[in-house]
Length: 494
Image 1: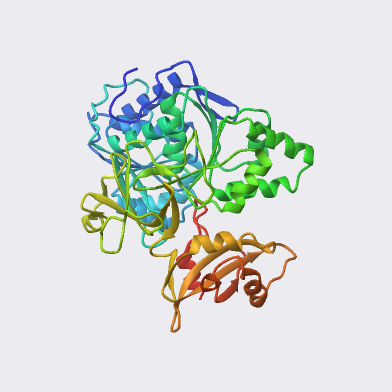
Image 2: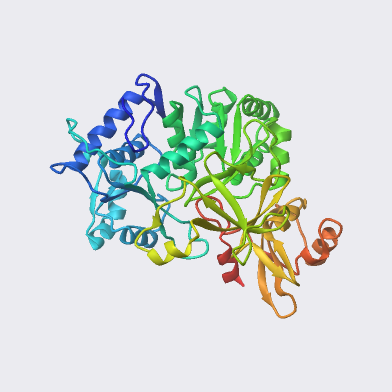
């Protein structure tokens, strides 16, 4: 099978590509389905010419069929969050000017009124699938391929458009950096409207000839059973998943825990990403499983840009070094490059991995680039050649008493308190401090804590100017689908 411009499937036709429940699909079967779906999309046309085709599907053979079918027919794939509210879907569909929406039949009743309102054709995979394959168009690598929406933690979600060249670069840099091979077997349970699941797991796996096990959600009993049996040799998750696994261990027998931890220990790689991995969690996971988590840094607009090494030192609290083919530079507030180590600056990125544009938003696109560098909005420091993320300049950098403080650093310390289950730190406008460090805390069951106790505990663990000036209690922190805390919602609580 020849590789075209778009991200393609490994040419090993007889190898198992996907496992979904009790069903397995070879690369040949996935390839055939993608071609038939592309043919059905084209119908009597020769090229979709970047028509936006959205799909509302969980991790499944249908999802892979649609994504690769859209690419092969020359369309732009718009994967949607299956947990989205109707109002959110309306924004995505109207923003992207979607013409067709693919969903499983059981979702049609919910989606039909919205599709009628927006004049979008609502279809199932079977309705589109052709019976015979048609001639498919040649798709150049500069064509638009996919539109993902930003998480919307700081503003209204924007459509991030990547070309086939962009996605190919994002995939191939990770295959090289993380030593992907056809021997790899990995579970995929992360949301498939996000770069982590789409590129890091699914697309890298299919490009390398690996086997990907598809789960519509994170099924802890089933997945840990397969971990214990040695099914997987690679595991990628967000920090919240690792926390849930550790909590799960507290509720099962020690023999079962040991079996699961041995299963993790035998893997070649465990990765954490999409949110900062607290040092406490990094150390806990290593103590339990022997696995040193590989933390990396990326975002919707760039795929992955920085990573701890596959072979080499992986540092807790750091995201590592630039990936192959990716240029990284820190800049100060005057747009001057920072050359000194341990001086905070905004991360800016160059490379083929960088997205093309924000859909139908030239103003936002223009503002996100300076002198050819994509401005991430994330602040980091370089410490002995390793980058450490301080947080997003807009929500995680607190300017208090003349200091620039990292909310992520303060959160990492507070998480080691025995009464604290989860915590988020924000800066709140204050006449004295400029911004007052404020901690939102969810306590562990049967635990108690007041401000004076926390303040006394913090002494000696962090500089006095970093100690929270206020403590607020919540049942649980507001999070988006990828487990990231939505800090604007905390401001709203105040």
